[in-house]
Image (cartoon, rainbow over all chains, first blue to last red; front, side):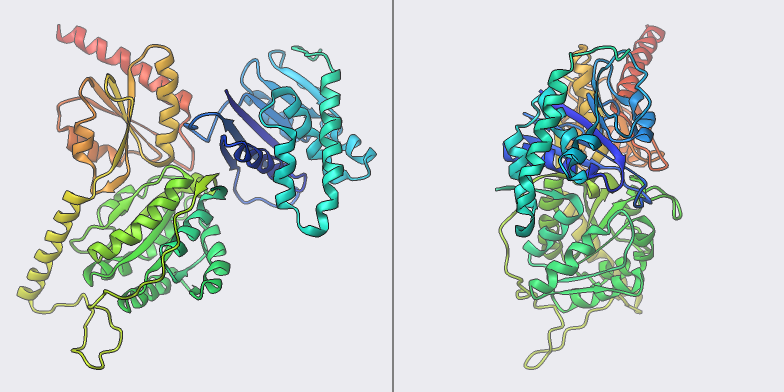
Length: 187
Length: 358
């Protein structure tokens, strides 16, 4: 099984880090992984995205035109990338920032108010982990504990205390999507 | 143990592990993580990292360090590599070992910072003035960025020649798991030709200037013999499902990875396709390509250029099979879907032709 996911949002939302944690988690599970960021004349507040692949075997191309899943963190990313997802694929939308509903009827779509959840946890920075938790719950691409192990390795000593709020964010994201019925059509 | 690394950083780490202690460069996207990484890592390892005032200065610093017997590297992208060509010709003429990394971007001119493969001609034909060639290695993964950088230093010393590592913006930015090679001690010994101070021995002279025509011709003959030796000894390519393939794709670097995905997809539909991925672009692996076509009816070359390697493929196939080309330029990547479409179009083309011939 090859998991391909596009993560998109604006700079500062932890889009690239979300992808890296997923890739790192896969590495810790001895899987093949690739992480490819968009690069260009980027700036803070501008758009950012990356494509991550996690697979049990050698990955042919790290660049996929039509990924099987997308995590979109804001409205511009939804407009730009909704059309890219493979038919029958998975679309996770941060509904706190993407206020319009997705239009495609041939995707499994889930709305996750990630910013609101993060805010209720008192740490807005973990909105990306809410999205990642939701994605992992639906796909099982890697386990929660691998991602948390990866996060632990990247956090410096004085920031280790943030692990628990990150775990909480992932769990709430997972809960949100497991409560939503597996919807093929959003409307 | 595997670690997750970005292609550009992996090149930097591999160079240090190969015993490289000198890096001279000038910034340009999409290779900036190489100097960024080495600016921290080299001083730590007791080496020299220097950001020169220009690419031309950097390549001439490479000349100096290589002449003194050090393992030395520089890196850049298209426009910067063009600036370095005079220096590379001097290095080849003076037979100095060094490693030059080109993380290709879209051209010509300043072009773009997005990935490209259109520096193939420049890399494989020498690039600068005069009769010379350099070995060119084309990685397609972060692991190969590591392995081939390491290998490049070995080849450079063995042949006393500049060696190019030719990758592109995707491979530079891509993160993948890598296993790093053991760390070699920087070894500047065993280079009796190096200018290391001549107390107690005859002085060594390193130059590419031979004003006497007979002397220069003799020098050229010696160089040509060396290039011939490289052609016999350095040939590498990867075969993928070519044994029964009727359509054989030829692609290098990231284009090969995308082509591999296309081959996998059309195989699912029963189309017998395969892929030959040249790893040494010069010397071009002619023998390996010829042996990859046992059942081939046609060849499709895929590049991120308007068609450069396709000429070497045509020379190798030498009219025995039709050779087709598909490429993207401008910093755009060919998609696996586009390549699948090309393969299917060729199915039609060849059957039409056999009808005409019948």
